[in-house]
Amino acid sequence: MNVNYPEILQELEYYNIEGRTESASFLMWYLEKYFRLDQQLAIDSVCDNKGDKGVDGIYLNEGLGTIDIFQTKIVQSDKKTIGDSTLKEFIGTIDQFTTKEKLENLIKTAGKAQVASLIKRLDLLEKLDAYKIRGIFVTNVDLSNDGEAFLNEISYVEFFGKTILEEHYISDKKEINLLTEATFDVSENETTKYYADAETITYIAPIKAGELVMLEGINDQSIFDYNVRGALGNTKINKGIVRSIKDTSLHKQFPLFHNGITIVAENVDKNDDKLTIKNFYVVNGCQSLTSLYRNKLYLTDDLKILTKVIKVPIDSTLSSKITEYSNSQNGVKPRDFKSYNQIQIRLQNEISGRFGDEYYYEIKRGDKTPDGLKVISNESMGVFLMSFDIEEPWNTHRKYQVFEDAYNKLFARPEVTAYRIIFIQVLDEVLTSKMTDIENQLIARYALTKYALMYITKGILLNDETGKLLIKKPNNFVKDVKDRNNLSEALSIIIDDIIIDLNAEVGDLDEDFDYKSSLRNDEWVKKLNRNIVSNYLKQIRRKRIPSFKEEWERAVDNNV
Image 1 (cartoon, rainbow, N blue to C red):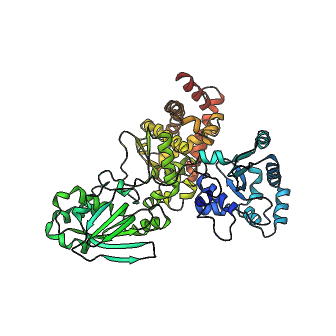
Image 2 (cartoon, rainbow, N blue to C red):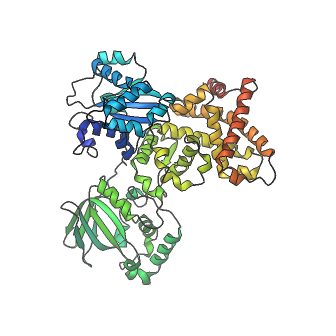
Image 3 (cartoon, rainbow, N blue to C red):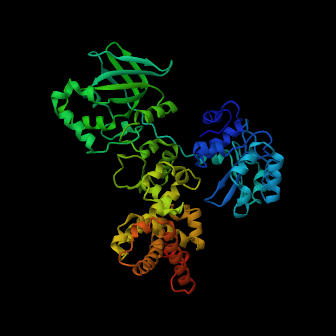
């Protein structure tokens, strides 16, 4: 990542449009790429225009309990730095949020400026007492010596400059393993050519299946990296495809009842009877092409696949649209469309970079996962986040929400990093190992029970000094294998105590107790949480059981 001017403008292209300042575009880009907000929320959080009282953006950070006030400065010379005078002005901006009286005055004097409407939309006057104020200064240059000295004395302002932005950037794009070229014989049928514009050209032709299965990357599925899902195995549809492949009498008719495949390619050349493509991916037709590859002994020259080849930059917005719209048929789920969402790709890249020796973050169905790694499904993780972070375990039976209505509140938050994903995964691994300790096996084997236990575990951690730190910033608890083992050991003891209380609570209920309805009832789960947490804290105060802090410290000491 290069944040020098004017190179940084290439990164801001999506946001840097007429009517918007480069500074506002820069902040929106930062909020998406580093603060992990989705694009729409990033835009909604920025108010950088005339009359905004020095406030460039505001974000209500519920995870950290802060109202984040942003100021940005995009500097055209990489030789300049940010000094203490600029930061002192920012302190003055932040001061406008320190009391209700000052905030009311800001709203009044701002008039119709965007900052006033943003404050009202976030309902900050009502929330001011419950949140801390945090200033975040974002720029593409570094601090001067006096600027650094000044910030060392200020605890509520964070600075993100050139060095931090370039060193901490995590790509939200798939690593493009561009495939070698391929040439198809199209002499037997006419090739249709369609111009969407001067640069985007589509070629449509029936291509021999025997040539298509020779494409590099089918066996390891890398040719489908830009497809919304991988090969799904023996589904009903795939079994039907295989039957038609094995029936040679149907080969000439194959294009009549098969939808065909779609390929996006950086370079396409039609020369006489040959169609040559370079740097390409299959974005639709994974199931068919995989089935053809696995049954290539049955292929004949009569079996042709209607193939659409689109000349377009692979890593472009248009390519993403082609992928989405060409997959908008039955059988494609909301999760599939999120497989190339920037938030999911960034998480996958981050987990691969930090924890790739132990974990693989799966973001699409049919993903071919590396051998020997623990697989974290983003669908399961969404349910875990709903239980632990959002504190709504009673809603987890509506799993479809994870990639629909609840998606942004689950994943599009600055605290959802690789470290958080791994922490929640470790918690799930411990809980899964403990479910057999629940005496009522009907409840033990009901999925919502584990999610309720996640919620209760958080209730206990929130009442512990070290537990609060774990929830707020899990980095130091999971950064290496030894830390993760220590965390697992400490959580294991806590969850043992929770399950003892759960068994007591459930044991007092009638035999015909409707556990299914109860675990979907927010009032019942909240009451269960209050009972178990209060009893746990009572035991801590009476020194009958160790706290999470004590268990963590013991685990660390024992595993030095």
